[in-house]
Length: 134
Image (cartoon, rainbow, N blue to C red; front, top):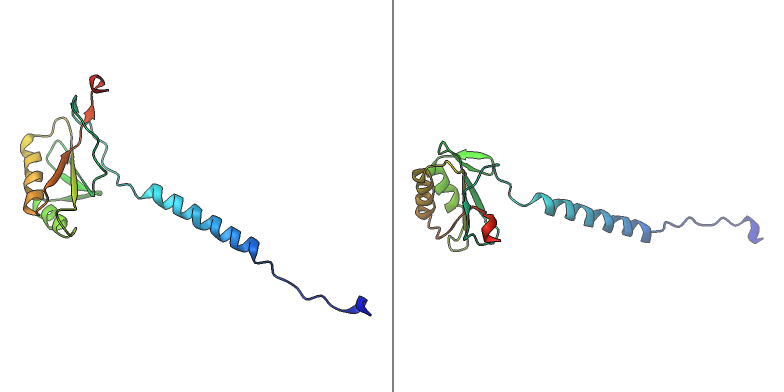
């Protein structure tokens, strides 16, 4: 009388685990592409002695009018100092300042002073390499 016995339904869990791992990897890859800090498009000055720096922890943009922007937020020099102090250990914070070609030296110095007041010593200036440097 085996013909009339009902079979118990089985849920196959292995394919479901494969799909979950695939989704996990997919979301991790998407998230990693979203993490790098994005700056404001600017025409940076050129230099023949540029060197590659490690990715900065904080990218500060200074436009030609002297406005300071960090991660899309306009800040004053004082607010920048407060924000940098909140980053934690100043020896581990790397700041890169990206300015326009026409940004005044005084505006750049204002940002550097704000960084130094926060205790930051690792400050870099962003520049494009000239063709001669390649």
